[in-house]
Amino acid sequence: MSLISQNAVIKDRIKKKKKSRRNDDEGEEPSLLEDREEFSEQEGSDVDASVSHKKKKKRNDAEAKQMLIEEEMEMQKLGSFLFGSVYSPVEFGKKNKVEDQDEVDLDDSELFVMDRSGNDVVSDYGEDSGYQMGINDEDGDKQRKPVWLDDEEEATVVNISKANRLRKLRKEEDETVISGTAYVSRLRAHHAKLNPGTDWANLDSKYKSYDSDEESEVDNGAVVASEYKHVDDILKTNEELVVKRGVRLLPGILENSRLVDANAEDPSNGPVNSVQFHRNHQLLLSAGLDRKLRFFQIDGKRNKMMDSIFIEDCPIRNASFLPDGTQVIVAGRRKFFYSVDISKGNVDKIGPLTGRDEKSLEVFEVSPDSRTIAFLGNEGYILLVSTKTKELIGTLKMNGTARSLAFTDDGQQLISSGGDGQVYHWDLRTRTCLHKGVDEGSINGTALCTAPVGGLFAAGSSSGIVNVYNRDEFLGGKRKPIKTLEHLKTEVNFMKFNHDAQILAICSRMQKNSLKLVHIPSFTVFSNWPPGNKTLQYPRSLDFSPGGGFMAVGNAAGKVLLYKLHHYQQA
Image 1 (cartoon, rainbow, N blue to C red):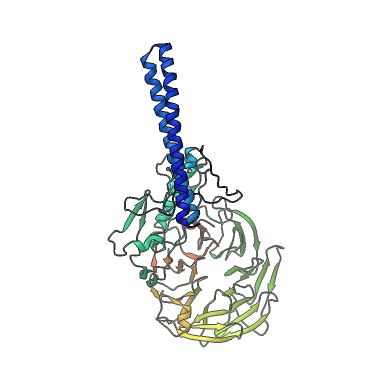
Image 2 (tube, one colour; image 1 turned 120 degrees about the vertical axis):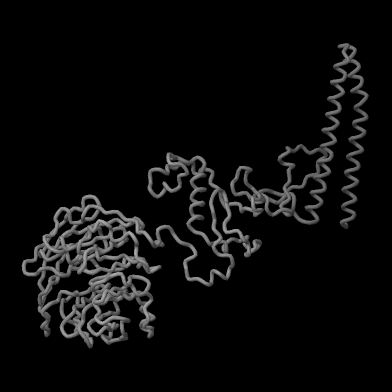
């Protein structure tokens, strides 16, 4: 049977149904009139007759509406047969039944049909949804619907006044509790505020003009900046496109507060030459010329002293944890040095080193892999000692005197400088010099420091100049420093990068308050450091905590000043 013949059969069937219903109506009309006459005769009221007429009219209208619905259903069945299941899609787990019935009794909800083929932006969510598709905002852009909605968000209650990290979400000062939906909305707005410049990731960006003069758009109260006007602008910068909170440190002012002195329970009786945080715990080491090695548990409030060790025959010039945290190496102006076992409390005296006649081993550095200790020796020699056996395993020789040294972040290379104004790069695996280059403007190198990340190193000289280099570029032959820092007027004695290499501390021991903190991304000093009340006195040592939250400064007065850096959440 052809499609035309099928259509004709269906039309004939519809016509027959109309005719049969018309005859039924005509047949029923006399009986209804008779009933109405009898009723009117019994009651004798013309009002009742008009009411009966209205009922008959409503019933006829309902039957006419039912007939139209049947015709609609027949047309849908025909369309489904010809073009597929558009109006009544087949559901899994149910049989597809086609029943030809004279009368169909369906609810209005079952008769409602949504044609999704004509409009792709119809929302499946309620009218109150905040992310419906097809709803235009003020700029005419269509919002996308969420993939999933949580019904429990509205019932959830969040207290945003308890946690410090949630107080920024408050719109009013006395606001405390908000609903889960409002909490999610404010988090989205805060994220959009902190992460501008991501319009290129918007799927609808192809419909927008990149030459728009608008610099921002407002979406649900959140301002989203349009930093990148062209897609090509992304390829012209090496900056991170998404910046997490607390990662990028801004220049200008370093927010900090002074806490209780780290050694308040037991101040030193002499200059504090070494302070260092333990890599795995909130433990601080303090050592100085009073021959005492102290350990403090740092919490910023009490800073309880855990232990102290008195070394009788060695005023301490330098002390350092091994990176694995098991031992402390202590040295002074002696031919020997000490190794302190933290867990057992044993103190071992080591030296003099075999075959060497050094008068002082006070300057040393420990490799990040805890395998090697490098001491500065006489006549430009660098002595390499094993941390396990405490025996001399090799030497390196510079052309001039050796004044400073530093390990690279992987522990495979060593950098040194000295009286000839040159910077040496050594390969510890072959114990050969990889590269030697002149430190620009330096006559006598006095301090070196390498960054834990980023491949930077800083070289300080006796004139107070600090040059910051990219290590890979320096090894490639580029002698020009990235930045020359001229903020110190006297000899640079020590320098220190923090854990993410965003802060560089440079210090001179010969002048009061001569401690500067440099913002590395912009190579500018923080304007509010050092503090104006001159509490630093003569700084002698400095260290940052592993998470960057604390900074400890030891001075010549025997105090270890403790500061909290608010940018970093972890200690």
